[in-house]
Image 1 (cartoon, rainbow, N blue to C red):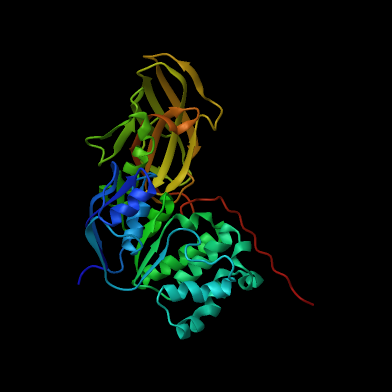
Image 2 (cartoon, rainbow, N blue to C red):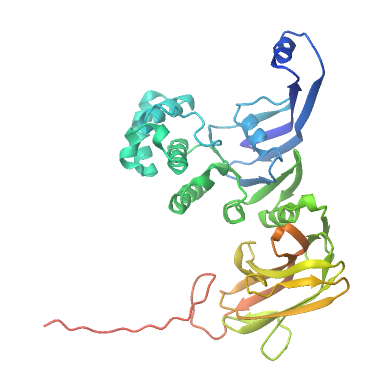
Amino acid sequence: MSWALKVDSVSKSFLRYRRESHRVLAWLGIRLGSVQQTQVLHDVTFALEPGEAVGLIGLNGAGKSTLLKIITGTLKPSAGQVAVNGRVAAILELGMGFNPELTGRQNVYHVAGLMGYAHAQIEGFIDEVHAFSELGDYFDQPVRVYSSGMQMRLAFSIATAERPEILIVDEALSVGDAYFQHKSFDRIRQFAREGTTLLLVSHDKQAIQSICTRAILLDHGRVAMEGAPDAVMDFYNAMLADHQDQQIAELPGHGGALLSGTGEATFTEAALHDARGQALEVVDVGQSVELRVSARCVAALPDLVLGFLIKDRYGQDVFGTNTRQLGQVRYEVPAGEALSWRFRFPANIGPGTYSITLALHSHAGHIERNYAWQERALMFEIVNRSQHEFSGVAWLKVESECETHHEC
């Protein structure tokens, strides 16, 4: 068997009755009045290989939560089937399965028992759950006095007390504090290295791109795209403001780069230059560079902001800013006007290949009004020709001193 989790042509519809009594009668085979049917999932199909880490993303209402409930067996599909090969541990709705009147310790027995663990097994790992959650004395207090972050600590610690064959993590981790989020993702990465199959549902681009080797995008209950995390996240970002009737297109000759937006403004030129004005494709660590961007307003705009974002080869954000943050918003821009910007900065980043994403949007942000968004508008390489050898994505100018002290 070459798969750990297989979702085969899964669809899900919900029926809405005018009255609850009509629903009860329908169970008995008696139909009264009209019934509204809402289809949430449409023929969803994908498979996860053993040890694979896959990100599941999508806008709110895309059907992610419904799909996860079907995968974990808490909801039945209207059509299709799900097959799993191994024990599944899932962290879905925060606090799901907790009894608020029981203590954290008692809830470990309660929830782990529902997960199929025997009492002796729970005895074997309950101290580890207590230690990993770092709840201290709260572990023996009722869960009803827990904050949402404390509930997440307990839920994650129970679900990962023993390494499962398949781990499903929903957005519940987002409510935790930064320290425990880092601790949780370290454990997730460790499980992935040890062979656990991971399905991670998150809007956190950094998490998806740093942990997952593949991503699946759901849109209105259908698989809209499946592939490398950076490519899928690019497409997802282009869909974020779909209510604006934006257009999404793949630019020829740009390595599959996406251009999205309302089209009320458009880019005409973008290039990276050195201090003498020469175009650059290869940049030395710490070298002063100038990013030049030109654009044209197709329609009259009440306000206009230009932003740029540097990404590494994994698609993770390295640095970004925009003219709103720099105090240079353009207001009342007429149709047909051409504009150009110059951004000067030292390339204090580590050796590697990078891309620049460009965005033209309103003062309120690109989610509110996105005129043009171009992924991978520029590509460039950083090499280390003049600095001491170093590690990491950022270069810091470091001065060091060493003193010798003689003891009497």
